[in-house]
Amino acid sequence: DADVTQTPRNRITKTGKRIMLECSQTKGHDRMYWYRQDPGLGLRLIYYSFDVKDINKGEISDGYSVSRQAQAKFSLSLESAIPNQTALYFCATSDSPGQGSNEQFFGPGTRLTVL
Amino acid sequence: AQSVTQLGSHVSVSEGALVLLRCNYSSSVPPYLFWYVQYPNQGLQLLLKYTSAATLVKGINGFEAEFKKSETSFHLTKPSAHMSDAAEYFCAVSVYNFNKFYFGSGTKLNVKP
Image (cartoon, rainbow over all chains, first blue to last red; front, side, top):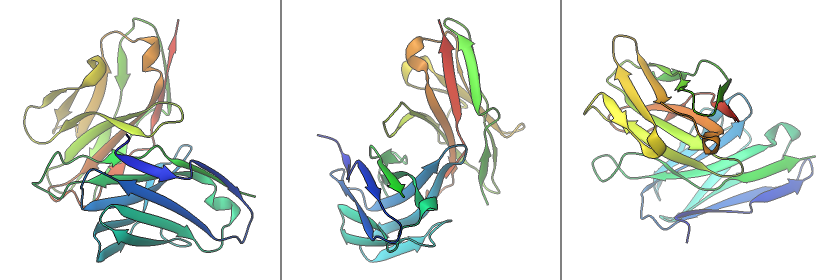
């Protein structure tokens, strides 16, 4: 079974709709991240969380919100989707410094299209 | 602040030829550097990482990278390209607390038969 899973894998929605993307991990990592990937722009950080009570904005958090329901679950919400939020979204996890490999582990991605 | 620049959004090589993907970083403190690969319709997978040990780092699938502080570079190489190497490659930088990872814009590698 995959260590980092994302649901759904693909979603098409309409402008103004509320959308939730979910991420679950079985790696036991404290840190979780949400990125979006756009062609030619690489990965940009939306939000990150270092534990259940710690949520931080990334470089492009406007229009998004997150919820860390448990150590293993980190959800990304688009309260009112707009077309320029069409992108590939990735969840990632990592150990705390000194606890492990100091790399990020990625889920398979969610392709979101906003019409 | 940290940042990463990948020169060349698309690189095309012939099968069996040398692969060279360029990455330059900017960091105000000693960096940790990573190369990730993304195959079509998949997430990112770690190829190799530099975390202040040996400056020449060997990764999976025959790739390696050399950390050159004087040039602020961490270029990825492979002596002989295979068709299966066709993918998008991302360079990333972090620092001692690994709070954030900063990714480059990616380089798509095309391997011609």
